[in-house]
Image (cartoon, rainbow, N blue to C red; front, side, top):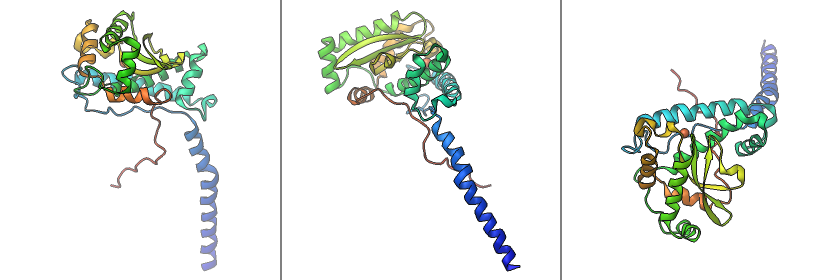
Length: 253
Ligand SMILES: [Fe+2]
């Protein structure tokens, strides 16, 4: 009897080892190799940007629009051809291939939105604080007011949906605008700051008054610390990916 129990124990251990060595790692490996982006939790409360951007706007914009881009991008990045790549690499691949336009649009929008949320904070805006970024702005534009003028012009002249950006082109800072999901990253430019000018970003609060929305963002919401960090980093901001840490198990009943 003792011997029989021992045998079954050995069979059990063998099965666990086989499962662990072959089945689980294979499953985990496939999951780990598929690039993914995440719906980054907002770095502030949903109502923290009021009265400039309402809690309702942020709720829809982050919880519905951004979330939909993340979900669709992850679904499309599960294809075997993207395994082992980083989301930014996949985005650059997709930008060059018309057959991957749907992936590009969703993935670029997921990344653009994460970047946009980080560009904002309560009680931000105004002039950039003294430092290397402020010096680079003066060097490229003459003064902050000129840079701001160009940002406003780009945001207002973008026909239909899109984005206004402050970017670094090597050592030179520039203002550019992009349509729909397009990002300056595909042009070899490094984004420092962006303003989302899709109507979903402002319509509940400002209706057709895009200029008032852009002014509110520039006057009150720009997170200059994040913009300065983008200026200091060697390459473009890389989006968050799912943590390698195991997910917390739900508590036992
Ligand atoms: Fe948006």
